[in-house]
Amino acid sequence: MSVDAKQAPRTGQPVALVQMRGISVEFPGVKALQEVDFRLFPGEVHALMGENGAGKSTLIKALTGVYTPTAGVTTLAGHRVSFSGPAAAQDSGISTVYQEVNLCPNLTVAENILLGREPRRFGAVDGRATRARAAELLADMGLRIDPGSVLAEHPIAVQQLVAIARAVAVDAKVLILDEPTSSLDQDEVAELFRIMRVLRDRGVAILFVSHFLEQVYEISDRMTVLRNGRLVGEYFTAELSRLELVSLMIGRELGVLAEVERLAEQAGEEAATVPVLRATGLGRKGSVAPFDLQINRGEVVGLAGLLGSGRTELARLLFGADRPDSGQVTVDGKVVHLRGPRAAIAAGIAFCSEDRKGEGVVADLSIRDNLILAMQAANGWARPIPRRVKDQLVEKWIKALDIRPANPDALVGRLSGGNQQKVLLARWLVTKPKLLILDEPTRGIDIGAKTQIQKLVAELAQEGMAVVYISAELEEVVRLSHRVVVMRDRAKIAELDQHATVDDIMRLIAHVDERSEAVAA
Image 1 (cartoon, rainbow, N blue to C red):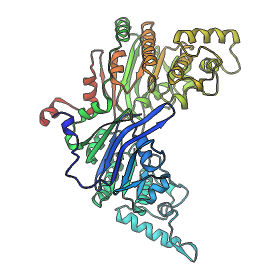
Image 2 (cartoon, rainbow, N blue to C red):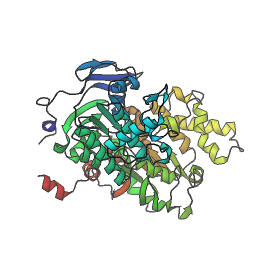
Image 3 (cartoon, rainbow, N blue to C red):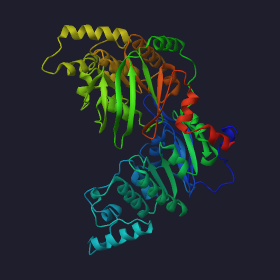
Image 4 (cartoon, one colour):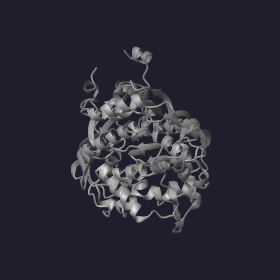
């Protein structure tokens, strides 16, 4: 059956509780959503799927009044609505529970559940009645939580359940759960799903956002898939295979970058088997399961997996941005204790974060100052780099990477995303690293800059540099990599050679094997 044939039918169903038609959200120079349709029915769990940047958060914010759509209409229970903010949405019965619980940890469970709606006696808050009412709500959901206990005393899983209880207390018709399971263990997820089923059976419409495919297939009835701010389709979960879902989410990039592929192939032929870095049993509890990984001289090792699979967490462990609690790392055969980024830099490891603005470039500094930051940090601030050396390095890398404008004094914050990424790459290349870790280096930049960066990666590998390359675009990973490490549910699940295809990777991400396909057939 084709994917189109599996789209959820538009007729023969009850009236949608939430209906969004032709929703567009635009910011200066960015079209975050383009004419997206979305429906949510009472008594269902509806998964909103898509990779990072697909528009999931933007759609939720458009629904709850955080963003005002530039086009489109939203109706709630058949009535047209336009909320001024989350408080107005909540007053109309739409409650949101975010990954980071937005409650008051210093207050009690009861106070959090009924905050702003506490029972009063003689004009003052009635503490006893507040605790009694909260106890009723918790018991109604089958939760055994002391309403008089301080919220901060409980683990994050319990705090999320309290946040849901608060939503129920305001008689929510729509409950939005944004990545609620990202910090939960298996038992905690099971308890959350139990509560979700209870609420669903009572007629609450639940919008569920998660990057864990197994959980989505366990709990959701239907799903809507977004990609690059556009609607891909609406599907019944039971009728859409995991492999098809991954394909819909990731999509296929048009065109082949022939020169990049040629360079990558040449680098692969010349890559040495001399290890630059070797990680043995490296891991961090709650972040990424212990893994083994060897990265050789002149080799590009790709990391593939969906958002939340553990790609970035693995990279941060290799750079010491997060401290591992198990395992060992050697660089050029010598044990390196990655207690922080400074130790990694000293060992010849460089890391370009996926958060270009938050953890990368300094927007208020010039191209020159941004470019020499890493080298200055490696030298120590007590040993400033001479101005003449700075100017030579800056001129060299502005020309080599075609950074525009070619003015060293231009503020980085005023550059395009592609040129900001080039400045960030140049910052690390100045240090002549043995291993360069690139986390989503081409996200959000135009095709011209993307091609230049991919070509640079292939050339660096040809020159002998080891590279770890992370990208949500699997064609990009396959094109550049000599080996591909596949991640799922924060664990390394496979390592593929240079002959791996996009379909091979997608099957592993979707957890599809020949036996399950035969059964499905």
